[in-house]
Length: 265
Image: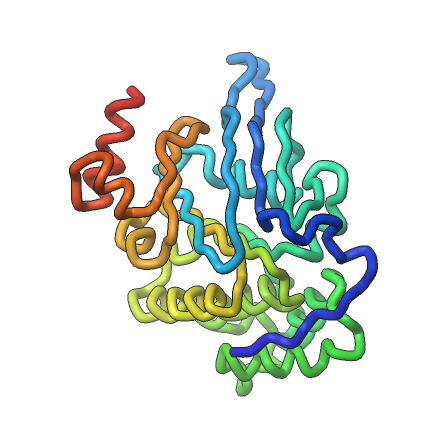
């Protein structure tokens, strides 16, 4: 699928085009709990992602992956540290970040009473896609995700598989250079998960920078160019799978993952 150029609005042009699309420096998130005091969910995470890369965040539930991604997506304010999407500061330039970023998670809502066409048009427009290209863009997405026969159907009446297609389509509706997918295949059947993985690989070939959060080892092995192993809000290791194998002397990612968790604890 070839995505049209989203145009060149002055406010959307990155001031430092040569910088990595994603830069995270010492990012922290601390929640205040009246009973237990401060809870540090993310503890000084740092990493960078390059163009055309699928960067994996691999960790168990509660490891801090989702909190990290929500900060990158401007949905949570960082307690300290810095993060930049296409050189825009996630804490101070949220509007520009959202134009450069697509965020998908199982909790990302759709408006049930909107049709498929209305949903895609809405998300393309609010994220700054050129108004005169929205109709063509939506048609392209409908064709790519094979949603033609459902274009006028309300989201609430779609099957779970088609709702997932609409969710992914809305994530890429404004053709952002950076995409974040938080546990995207949880709850999907095998064929739907494979279909998603194919879509992700196509997006990488188009030069998109993709952050994939997952706890599924086979998914990380198959898709990710580099993998960051996350536990208790920290990155324990970050490298390609081959580099992780060389350092640990282990072959299977599951064994490598357990190795680093045991080492940290």
